[in-house]
Length: 425
Ligand code: GDP
Ligand code: IMO
Ligand code: MG
Image (cartoon, helix red, strand yellow):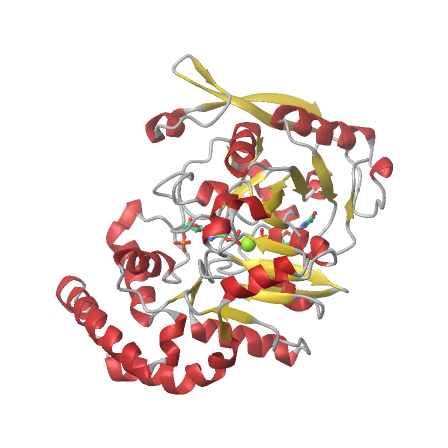
């Protein structure tokens, strides 16, 4: 059976968690393929809210095998804490499998993430300070420790000694910070955490392919988003992994022909956390209104999200980069009170018109959005249960977004609750 991907089409927090939840009933396995606990997703199940960072949201369903794939970076303390919190709330977490090839986030990664941000000063990226960038950097430099190393204490200690020697030089000589102690780290990772993690560690590539062969349906759950992608995002204001749908193959071990459906998640407006260009950003009263109505504060870090109008140039680019089969549009209800709504249909810079984000960062920083204005609906859509019940201005907005992005909108979110969505027919 084929595999589907859920991917963010903007700068994150599009509501991927909620759409994964919607699709979960049709799935047998949910696999995370990149990122780490920089993600934060909130899902409301039967009126009960769950905030997750690392565990695939499929864990909330008894019929699903949740998998953390090889492309993820894992802070084991965060993973165990999250599992404990789910256990306390009666969720069966024993089905979780974790790739032995996934890389570990180590204490020095978090420390270096914080220090580098401070060092960058006004040029800081506004990372989540979770150690994500430094962990992926070590993976690329081939000095990372992997989950499987937890099963081999001798190898773990050898690798740790080697890498910590260099990290401690950086910490002490460059940043004037105390050195970290290899024995303390090894004792925490190997003695305290490895015994609990060991039963979950597995060959996840074998597991996902066995599932495919058995005809099971697999959902690849992306975190972050297209414009936070290390290659295709607004570099350097990006994360250090590949959230785009192509990354789902590398990060799970599935092949490109195994993917047959790519669901792009887009908010009815745009948000961004941290630094970086944002052509349609709104400040002032309108910005405040969207932040307030959309509860635009990080699920994970509590940071206020920047907000702006829907950007069709980004959406078109996301459609190409991910070969989107459809868009799930979320948070339409947040726009309920507006009398008119702007949509960015392209950009202009130095007299040149752009229908896609210009590749050169200096140009992208300078673009002016070209807006079209459409009427708002000024009524509450949170209790509609069919697409037909939406006010005609709301339906026209959805249709307009389909026209300017060139992608079919298959789901429209009208509230945070599990049942608060409608399907355009
Ligand atoms: P993710 O990181 O992409 O999974 O998204 P987050 O969970 O960080 O942020 C999305 C937020 O929007 C969550 O609090 C969701 O409960 C909420 N949400 C999702 N869909 C809708 C919607 O259609 N309307 C409203 N009002 N909230 C939504
Ligand atoms: P979800 O999955 C929004 C942003 C950070 C920062 C940049 C780099 O909830 O959509 P990092 O810690 O990854 O090195 O930070 O990426 N960022 C996110 N923004 N949603 C996320 O995840 C994010 N994960 C990282 O704010 O700008
Ligand atoms: Mg989020």
